Length: 247
Image (cartoon, rainbow, N blue to C red; front, top):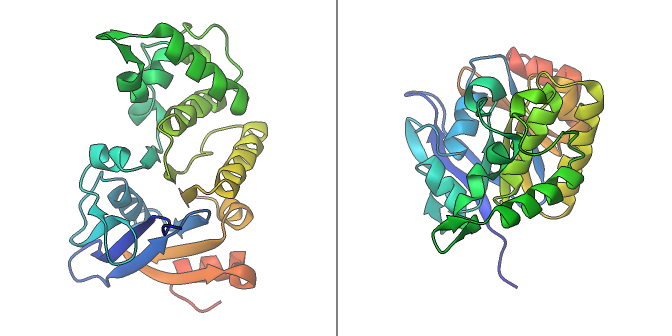
């Protein structure tokens, strides 16, 4: 059986002079990124998505010792990486477009038939993900702004999942959503990992990371200051890592 692909940070420095990061994200695991705002965790996530270029080193998708460099968002998407942005209002939704258009923009190429978009295909795909993510929405041609914040976030997640990625990068995915939606998303994330997808979740809430993730990388001053997993992954340990202290 062929070895499953992994997402690899190969000697990645986020800023000149900062310690290099060597990390491998493997199929079926949920990895958390934590840290005080501005300490490098978002830069690292965006580098894996092809949105930012690290000071040195490479992000690679492939098997150990071999792989393809991730140098742009388009390259990431074409090689099985999907990214969910942090601020859905400014960098996620297209507020003047419909729910269906917001969902289908990532798969326009698949829906083309003889140079025309197959409305039936994209509607069918949307309905599949609407049910899977329990999206509460009126007619799909309604404006996306008619939805609650939580349901807008589900549409964006559906758009990412429609790419059928192997790696899902989530930038504070439950920010600004209600508690009920949050728990629906948690169940979805666990199910995706159980099916073999790898997830990297940056969260501003430590409890979310502890509930969801198999391991966590704690960032401080644009370096990985600490790594925790299993019983060592506690609130006190993560907070201590954020401030450069021993737990």
